[in-house]
Image (cartoon, rainbow, N blue to C red; front, side):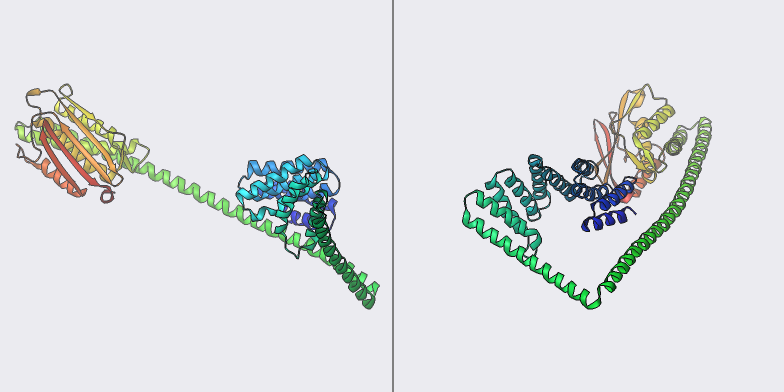
Length: 473
């Protein structure tokens, strides 16, 4: 509806009915202000500026121009051409009130912004405005330069717009003492004016002939009927567009309600699924905790040290997986694990199982890093085996020592794991007492993650792994 009022304002302005143009422009502005189309709101002020200027209400015209510029600059800064036209219209108001200094400033702003942001070719019309203003200020030489440059923007067919420019150029030449060029441009202007006058006479003669042939009365009645028909068409158009807009608004409201309802259902279902998944992780963790306790009870009754060590290793493996499920149901992200915090909890549990908290220091030398569950579980088991192996064999006779764990991404698609100790030299893959299941498990999990293991035995043992994330994810 705002667009319709704006069209009506333009039509009334072209019909030289400024009061009607002002009325429709104000109605359009009132509707645009209820929305967020600030560019359209600023453009609606153009008709208001022109209407007030034609009625001589220059203060209101200037205020409308100010508001137009402010709207574009603050609310729609990307609408460059709208801002440029706003400055040009404000310059027109200042020119009408003979505030030539302000008019020159606004025309210059419009021209420079057009050159910088749109292009030199589109800016030529603003040079004619600058040139005319300079002419009125008595700066004929500078005014002539701009007028001659700007007149290139008008084609020869634009007679009604170009002849005033010829008059202005001729006036500049006359004041500069160049009578020859002054006469040349006065003649150009006069030729165009005569052509326009002849066309007007021809049009009037043609209309008079038609009126004479068809009769004045019939023509008047036809004109009235045509005017009435136009008014009816406009009214029907307004009613039709209003009905269409109401229908569209109704459909929009209906679909928005359906969309919001569906969104609420999806959110509720997601929340329910998340709660159920957390409950599953909680129960799995509790079950693993129960299995760990049963293994601990069983191992306490064993006398054979090798079997008891194997049971403790199994207990730690169960604990490794249990911590992951605990992190999942306690965290906010059900699909990933923060590995540094996980390693800290895993280390504390393993130290407890070996009663080595006062003997061995386990340090996580890494930044916070989140991994998906499918990657975190195998890496957790690998670290569990390496820590267990180090505590069993690297620090005999209660020797104090230090174990470092590091996990990081050297590249976006690569994951590096490093576990090293400062204990006695002992290879992970070397034959040890026991079943050797831990070594086999490390190798199996490394292959599962499409990784590679490297071991160095120097001042202690350092085991490093490289995993490809695109294969892990």
